[in-house]
Image (tube, rainbow, N blue to C red; front, side, top):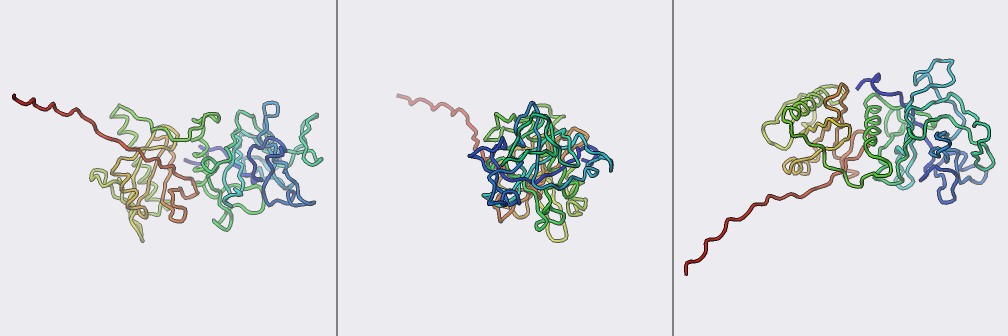
Amino acid sequence: MSAKDRPNILFLNVGWMKRYNGPAADDPTRGNFGWLNSDGGHRHGHECYNFTNDGGFCFGSHPGSVGTEIQRLGAGVRDAKVDGVVVVWFSRNPRTGKAVIIGWYENATVYRKFQEPKPGDRRMVKGQIVQHKVEARYSDCRLLKDSDSERYFQIPNRFERQGGYGQSPNWYGVGERFLDEVWGFIQGWKATPETTIATKPPLPPRTNDPDLKLLVEGAAIRVAKEFYRSPAGGSREVRSVEKENLGWDLEAKGPNDTLKVEVKGVSASAVIAELTPNEFSKMKAHRSSWALFIVTGCLSETPKPFEFRYMHDAKRWETTYGGVLNVQERVAAVVNLLPARPSKTP
């Protein structure tokens, strides 16, 4: 994917809440921002209204009064606002200490400076009128539930990764690959209505058309080979071992190691695949050198790659930027009718 195929993305760092639906007593804003810690402490930040349905719109705020460099999002240097931006809200999980995506606005309008609310709007926190920096239609906004199974996509800080977010609530990402993964993460939720989020992943879609299956698989293999031969994938030497039934499709040799890469392709946008018993056993046996490479949108002009590697400290499979692979083991069996026993001769 190139930048022209992906909307401009702005990241905004806010305090942690469950619902962001106003200053409810059972939903305080948690964080280490000045407003929450000043004047004896405030229970709610101005971001507490960020996912409130206000006449069919959401109006988003963030801590502090700093402006946003909207020219980095496609605006002119004198423009007061820019449209069509994806605004990703992230916050530090008080349970884990990790900053994660908590929701987003699509097709949003981002202002350079904070805006006064419309006349008659009474969004207030501690006697102060709440201004907003971002607005979007409520139907284009998505808040993830306060659970580690939904709020898991990690955002790196400047100590974890060069170019990571710092003290400013405004952040613009770190590299094209990272932005692609964020956009892929958002796209993956579109097929799952907010009111019916599955707790278990569905089976990946299957096709009975052998020609279509070959096209999807071939596209995925091409994307994987290009990735591992590129600097982003380690500038590796790639050898295909698909026909050897080893439990992986490619061997990607680098200066220090050789990765065993299992490639899965899907034509849809959801990051989901099915492993054979042989592949799954090799995944467990070769954790340190085995990689799962899933390509979504294989038949489109912009297929999206997701590489999962095993993280020994977290004891789970993750992308480079913290996307977590949910592994659900299934048990299968082969059944058949036993032949009838011959009757005994009297």
